[in-house]
Image 1: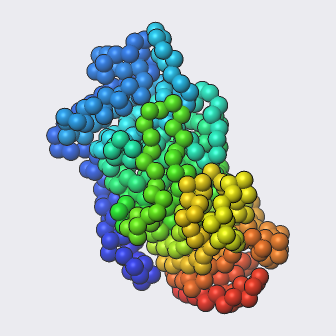
Image 2: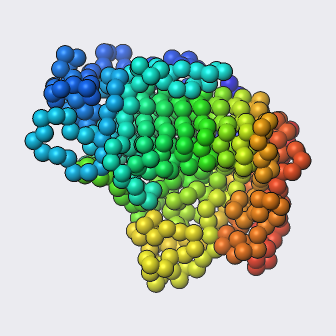
Image 3: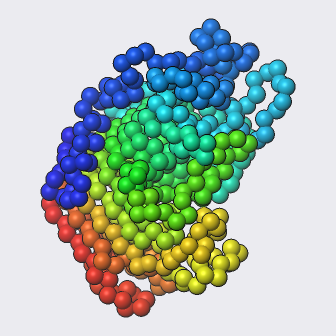
Length: 491
């Protein structure tokens, strides 16, 4: 356990407390946090069952959907932890209107909505390991949840949703374990977790997604021992607010074969004001249109330990302002300890630190909105609820306090664009062949101002030849504005 008080200047004691509680008895940590002293209430599911059943061990439900409905009713009268135990097998589903009067098992109603406090969704999967990292679940044990009908949209659907709903449902204390989540490229996300405290996500496999395999925003807890493949990115951990802080431990995962391995965002990551829920009668609780200071998510404290983040395009990305943020969110804070991981053969940048996703624009859009002609870099469906509620046009700023120790940053088989890039603009501004700013992209991406990087680099990564450094730029190359950013790197 490494709690580096030299660099983590803000909130260090709170962050280290979270990290210590996450590590103290790992993997027993999840057992301590997940189960109360009294025996849990248990609901059984077998997707191979020939009748609906009643959720008992002898007559299990034939869908996770039915077990979740039962858990919502049970929670009204039973304060114990509720465990949904799903037998090995395939649980297929889709986002379409459910068939009526079927005598055979109907499909799962996707997304599966976990909005019951202190709920465990337990699959039967037993993880196998290669070279000390999780690699796959033993085939005979896997509980596979998959999508059988194409339902592809823009950033707005997921197989599993964990978070608050408009009916008052909450998901604090949720555990998701032992599942194989396979989108079969028929939907967008694997697991989306939002505004939930004390989560435990462990020993799952998430793969074949069109966008993020696992997205965790405004949450606290642990993400342990998962396998995340085929994502864009594999894992996003994003900022939280005073009312729902982001304090996360990410340990012992395999995050491979993604466009980006792990993305750390200093802001809450929004999809749209309403997540697309298919035919589900439950609805995501939308983010507020005009958030108060306590609701504006702009800070994350995270420990990243013992993960394999290899064979992606980009490895570890710190984006101070993340994708899908409030259009008028202007600050982001990242406090991170990154130690004892391996970042091998990532073909783009093994490490990136960038402004992220903010664009040059004009505030006139917000006073004269036209959803058919929105600003460069923004997507209309993300902004529709926020027009006239600006301003969004900066200036943007942020603080990153991070330490790096005991990591392997080797690209043995694949030469990267550069070992790392540090910029207060976007990685997209730079020509990957030369590392020089592209004048055409400078027109679109703005630069952060009055920002700070405090990095402790005991790995020596940032002193390697070829690292792209644009964090010391004094003036905006487009309009000459003094940026007044500061960087401090120590070893």
